[in-house]
Length: 139
Ligand SMILES: [Zn+2]
Image (cartoon, rainbow, N blue to C red; front, side, top):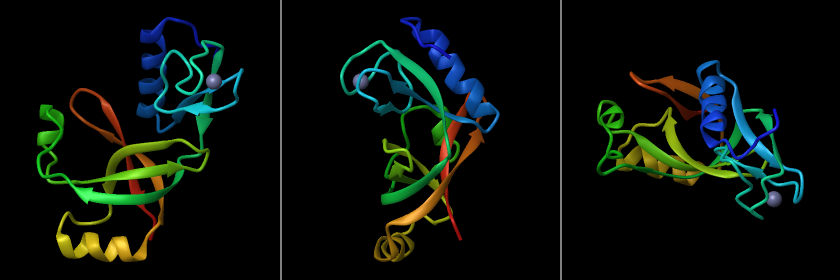
């Protein structure tokens, strides 16, 4: 897909993929870097010369923390407390997302920290209104 300045279509394209378990970013034709989550233009150089790409969903959890208060939206209040992490996608971009497979307790987070960085895999958490990307810790 060739991205244009039509941001709503890029956002729709991202969420349609997410609903189907397909993880998408945009790749810049000028600098070659990926932007995730996708926006209308490259976050590295500002170019609008971008195209959609699919991601493997493979990633590495760099750091995780529990959320003291959930993100200020009812969709997140329903699943709190949860663990939130910094995740480096195999393809390069670093994202922040919910992490599953660890309890949001100080003991479990410390054990995870001492073990890390750990491999994670993208998954789709279907909320009432929108799908949300999450990352599962690989066993
Ligand atoms: Zn660029």
